Length: 124
Image (cartoon, helix red, strand yellow):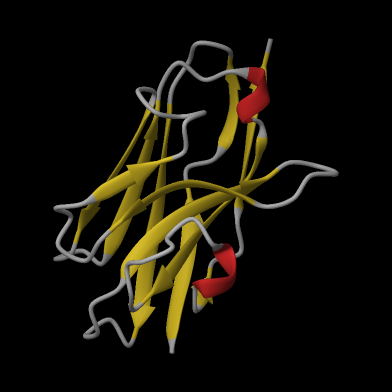
């Protein structure tokens, strides 16, 4: 089992920045790929970004490409999502997730572990 805890959410004005963190604990000896997803009220959960175990491969949703950066520090068992140039449409609960494989990474149904989420609100 792996436990994931997100932090770093909050309220920010449009154009501002936030950095989300996702700390993993438990069975962290296994190599996990990590993903960030988000869910706005009344909408389905959507893929934001993913990173493989080594950090050498990343992938982004078109809506955040060039504004968000996913990274990881395996020594700290932590994954980050740096969010710049935030827009009101980025407002959502952001979740991190872990899985042992790195294919079909946009499919939230293939992730094994999930955090509880952190709220990000961007005001206009």
